[in-house]
Length: 403
Ligand code: ADP
Image (tube, rainbow, N blue to C red; front, side, top):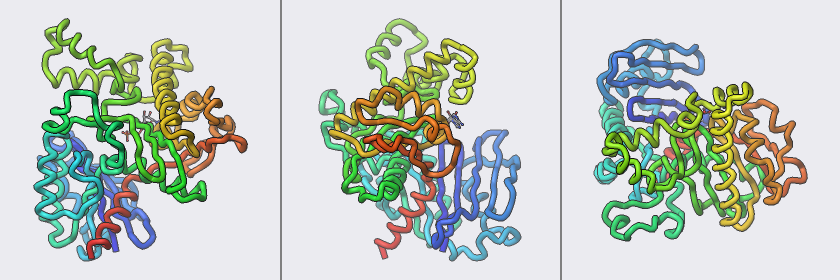
């Protein structure tokens, strides 16, 4: 029995086919630049090399159709019959406050998802198109929606509310939602296994550090707080996003510059032109920043220091909120791969009982591992995230619960 995980982004579709018995990845790939002349299709299977080709796809529906046809291609023998696919898991970026857990797709669920269009206008219509395209290509096979926001729905109201007039919460659903929930959920579950303790007895801080980054405080398996907010802009300094700023800066820019009058320009400024890229003037990629730092580039050093400092602030705050922490977990592109970032974050946090072993931290590995000293009160771990596998597991669970 197989699970097909589908992730429709604003201009891309990614997919992974899992064999559910052994959780092995059988086939995976993506179509990017949908609707553009440079659209391409990259795919790979467990027994074939990566292939990349230019394709013409006008929309998400066509992209999903192409992918499914590819998987069913008799010559590749990835799936000999459609009935081998037990479930399709769709990654959904934003479930608003309608969805606090993964759900089986029904007509009612599709209607409720439509109500989330305005809250994530770049992503939700793409997800919706993906769901319909899969239904058309694989009729009768159940689909499950797995939300990035769902894991964070356990936050208490005083953590998720913004101190704006209450009507904005009631009318516009403006509140903190949090993102990367599937990743925070996955690494917290893995941490419990590695720490040999049930999640219900653990206090954890998970740091998902990629192009977009978020920090989450988890107690007894439940999210208490998370750094991203109403959108994935809030929180720590990121590749191209500014993270926390004084919101009055926006009003100031609108007053000062005629150019910054509309929502799109301001959103572009804060989401696409800020963060590491904006401060360094160089790159959003941590590898470029580290290289420039080693060459003595002052702005790159400043951008690096700001990113590290902002993460330290969240870790310190969440340590206090949780009243102590058992483990700090690093994951995603930067969290899994960048020893200098991890070392700088953990440096001078010994007051919290966080001590990393500098040598262990430097060892390159794609394995789950401890990087704290033996005497560190707080264990520090690196756990590669696996959002696709988590979606496949969730989809299987929902399917079994609905039998
Ligand atoms: P996304 O949020 O798009 O999923 P990723 O989790 O793939 O992003 O993370 C991308 C980030 O990871 C980039 O800033 C990249 O520079 C960083 N990264 C990847 N490998 C390394 C490495 N070896 N050293 C430092 N940073 C790295």
